Length: 118
Length: 107
Image 1: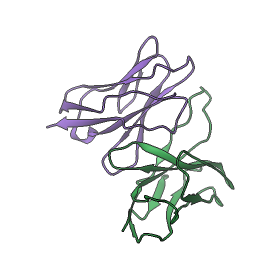
Image 2: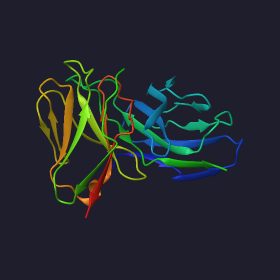
Image 3: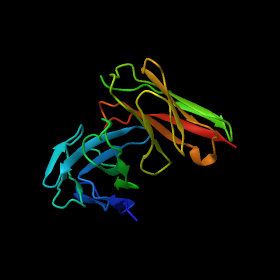
């Protein structure tokens, strides 16, 4: 059963600690993405990766880091430099680029991790 | 700027049709419009996409204006499970999920 998983669903950390959020997919997608969502707001792109061993900053990359050592995995580290890390974090994957008809490909989202920094 | 405009919220009675509008005045002739929805405390899920003509799938229908500057997502019979935030995604910025339209379905 193909899909994208994120763990844990809820995460609590003390201020000043780094924390790593897991994202795994078995959809054989080359592209993966991390978004942040604050209450009542839309999604904001943190980082994205179009292929293994390559990734680019999104709109709000400061205070975050990622790695892409395997196609299936795209972990996100929230560092102590992130001023306001409490949020809902969403991971997604897709076939990169656009399809034959020119439409960009659908993103598949995980269930999200809700991070609370105390 | 490649963004879309949607009403912040809408209400519908259960089992009635719902029409969710979206304005995308900066769209070009070959750009597709995508719609996603996000159920409470879940990640977004794809709903439908289209280019020019109306599109239908098991979840919804998409009506695209002749000038392509607007589109309408149609839920033919709203159920309580359709209560969600619906996002209309501008085709030139697939990473921009604005605040969308929060749909409330009234039993």
